[in-house]
Image (cartoon, rainbow, N blue to C red; front, side, top):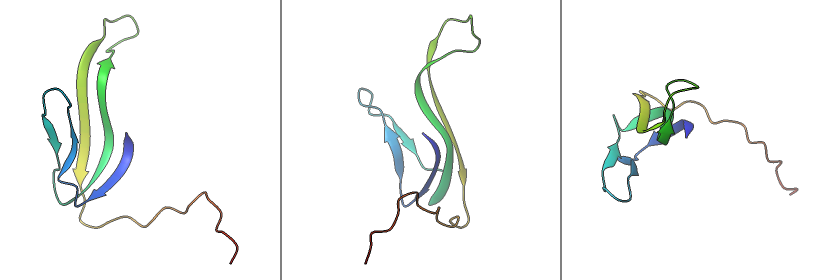
Length: 74
């Protein structure tokens, strides 16, 4: 997941087998990157299973993104 904005989401994700939670850094936060699985350090490197959770606290929510979906006629 990339560029996700959260408010009131105490647990962003939890792992099925271990039950380990990925918890919020604050009430409102922006997740730049969340990834879990095979990661490669280099093109020729052996993959390893890693978790990446790059999130930053927010003091206010950003403005809403304009939708790509057209409005229905009224």
